[in-house]
Image (cartoon, rainbow, N blue to C red):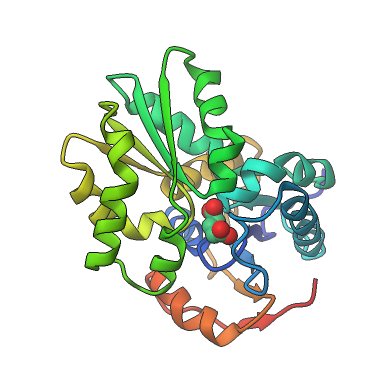
Length: 268
Ligand code: DGL
């Protein structure tokens, strides 16, 4: 087995939302290099068909594998929900996705065994979170709600805006009525709405940020497989997008919480 420890981690998303996962990875694994691909030309995926999402996911996987990544992370909940198998079948390196990490955290956290899940329509329709949660504990009741308006609201930067608050109240009402004590943020964009969602949900509900859970899982996988970069050197971060690198750069910095390096336009 060749030594892959200094190779980058490949992370991908339908657009810039996956930078929330990159942010958690940078904090948790500060010496790991990252190659990111965001399909800004074709976002949003959450309202597209399963066939289309699978085709796009296969193209992105091939692109990142050409960069000799040591593992792949499907940061996008929608792709993880419906194209997980396509990516795993194509990849000779380990693949992690946000779903299992979020499900595991929710199972560990819930006391009432009533868990809410919010995501894009594609994610919610796939029922993937309920299946992942039930694989750990079949006694947990899962209540899901698609929140398609959250993605554009976050991209607009309306993180603490009355329109977003009213939208959240409307979306969350049915799941909150089920006496959940845990709410899984099943979409790359939702961690940015955490303060607002916490306020709307109330203090008794724990929010599960799958980006954080993902970074923990990645650290564990790298260490188990002896693939972590033990060289204490500055990591290399590369960002590729399929359209509008400038917009990605400006909005992306909000997702990342720091300055983004150079962003390149890539043809996949
Ligand atoms: N990245 C997607 C997700 O996590 C949200 C944006 C989209 O719909 O493409 O589900």
